[in-house]
Amino acid sequence: MTEARIAVVTGASRGIGRAIAISLAEAGMDVVINYRAGTEAAEETAKMVENTGRRAYLFPFDVSDPEAVKEGFKEILKACGRVDVLVNNAGVTRDNLTVLMKWSEWDEVIRTNLSSVFLCSQAVIKPMLRQKWGRIINMTSVVGIVGNAGQANYAAAKAGIIGFTKSLAKELASRNITVNAIAPGYIETDMTKTLPEDAKKVLISQIPSGREGKPEDVAAIVRFLASEKAHYITGEVIRVSGGLFM
Image 1 (cartoon, rainbow, N blue to C red):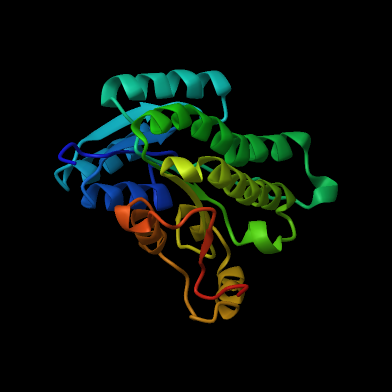
Image 2 (tube, rainbow, N blue to C red):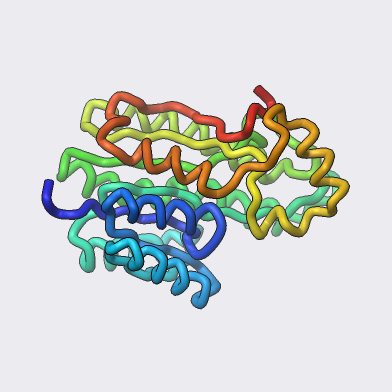
């Protein structure tokens, strides 16, 4: 295929999403950078993508809003003609003990982290079916597998992604469309930089490899799953955690 594949990465303005966008561009794909806020950071990601020689498209919309997703992907398809790879990466945390958790903290995390995966996946299924090729890669977390005190909302959303991934993989496997999930552990991002040093030391002490991961560690697995080489892998949850909770 001479025409470049098109990858959509949600929440791609920074952190893991940025690393994924750059890695897919390095693999020869043009990249749609989705973000909700932080235009300056998103533009920086776009420049990094373009520095690889690939095209970058900026599409700001809220992936938890059904109408915004519908219109956003309509515009993406109009601009790019196709979507070959979807990486559902957007996410937020609103940590609190369950007894103290506000409905807004529960609802925002479920909508942003889980409902968005359904909405964006649904938006690309028909185009992928028409082209008889596709890759859907969903970012879950080791927390969705083992749970975590103070993160019942986040754990529920990430566990839901695992169930959704397996179900959609079964629906699409015969149509040359794979659906997989990646479960990062403790990855060094802007989100984790705010953790107190003592908390970081406790976390790292639980990781057999003895260190936190980098966004590029996660991006490398996304790049593989998005490639032709991963055509026989679907419905899987791959942990990128240095052995945490093995």
